Amino acid sequence: MSSTEHAHPHHEGAQEFGHGGTGKYWAVFLALCLLTGCSFLTYFEMWHHAIPVSVSRAFMMAVSVSKALLVMGFFMHLIWEANWKWVLTVPAAMMAVFLVCMLIPDIGFRTYHYSSHRWNHTPQPIEQPAEQLEGAPASLQPGH
Amino acid sequence: MSQHHDDHHEHGHIQLEYQPALPIPNGKLCLWLFLSTEIMFFAGLIGAYIVLRFGAPTWPSPHDVHLSEPIGAFNTFVLICSSLSVVLALEAAKSNKTGLAKFWMCVTFLLGLSFLGVKAYEYKEKFAHGIYPAYPHGLLYDKPDVYYASAVKVALEDAAKECTTQIDLVDKSAADIDAAKSELEEAEKPEDKKKAEEKLAAAQKVNEQAVAMADTYKERRETLELLRNGLIQWNTRQATQTANPVEGQALLSSIAYTIQHPHEDEEELTRLVEEKGTLTTKLAELEKAEEKDPQEIALIQTRLKLIDYLTADNAEVLRHGVNHTYDWLDLPFVIPSGNMWASTYFLLTGFHAIHVLVGLIVFAVALPATLGVAKATFIEAAGLYWHFVDLVWIFLFPILYLF
Image (cartoon, rainbow over all chains, first blue to last red; front, side, top):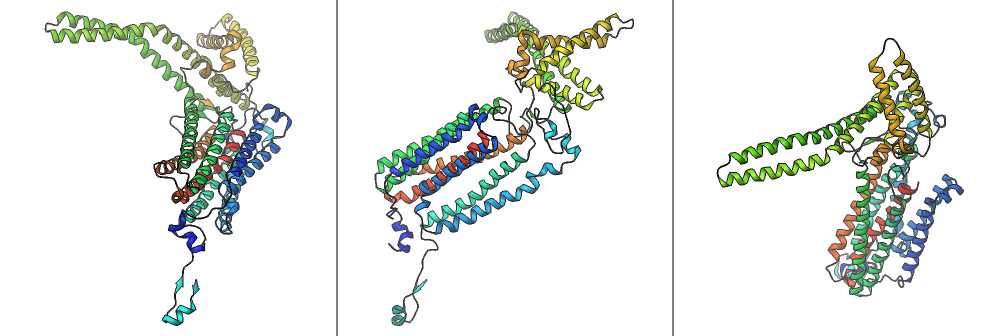
């Protein structure tokens, strides 16, 4: 089947997908359920006591990325697609990362430039000691 | 582009064979182009959430904002199941097993509906607790400041007015009964009599209900006035009179604590017990004084009454919070960064839910058709879209529910 035929509407329904049976989909499904279970482990108190928050977050993101790769690779068939997949996905992914990075200086680091007046109107943690916050005025909040 | 030299020599012109830019069907290409824009769209949204969340000095825990992690995990499972079912529908369609393809498509459709149903339940829970994405319905305040105290005072006064209206209904309905009775006596025509009888029955019904509820509303009004005078008025007054801003902030925070009881600790109870001791001594001194200040005495008595009320029955009201103790009362409450949380949560999950809805519409369009090999490309495109929706949720679940 030539590439022209492949794209022709007449042949669209009859094109050869050639990815084998459905067994691999069930295997991916089980893997996804298992990975979801892994990230849900972080919900339990036992996990909180044993694992530092930063490690826990890195673990959750690693699990999410693994799940995303499984879905994209197998369910979205990218693993079997030709090199065109890079043309569409890589620039979009780069742009996505760029968009997020552009938010960091002004949004992510916004509190770095807060004035004391601005801090007066900023929501601040009730329990966390104020001295832990860079630039935050000290405030004791009994009753919490 | 390729040239067919033989044809060129024979016919004297160039014949061109056009090749597609990418070796995939046009529909699939368009869908992937669309998905690439969607990647940027959701990356911007999720990225903005992450940047806002980690740049904020504080962020509410899922417990604070009534988010249920098991429900989120369940919805993740539902979407994973639907991703499997749509890919099985595609496989069945490619094998021309139309019945099986339709079955898996139906399963996908139902799972998508379940996801939306669970999401609707979650939204309902948020709204029931006064958490809205924006004003004017929201009861969320970021800080326990004077604006917050003022909002609670207004809410208490509104609720007290509502109670007064209900209590006044007893007298009003009694007057209506008298009016209906005299109307009945004066009526001559049967139609007028019937009308008057109906009026009388209605007024009697209202009167019965009003009398039955009068004590409840009187009790509620007393509680509301006690909270307004003994908590809001007192704490605000003390906060404005004190020279120490830290102490002033603590008094305002105490209002928020009493309304919602955000943490499992005994500090507020201890503080109230200590305050009661100090105020009792002060009250005794004021009562013994030669020049009595009846206004100050009344204020302290109200405050003491409130402390007794909050600490009665093993401090039941204080431990549970006023909002929780009285389900008939929705007072504004404080969750630091709660408004930012609500805005980002509803924006992210709302856009995701819209995408789920669009996917369901696509499935609903496909369901009546014969899902054979001729429809395989359509199912593949719909499936690709659906998997993308699943992909987005794969990232939303941990960052919204577990981080």
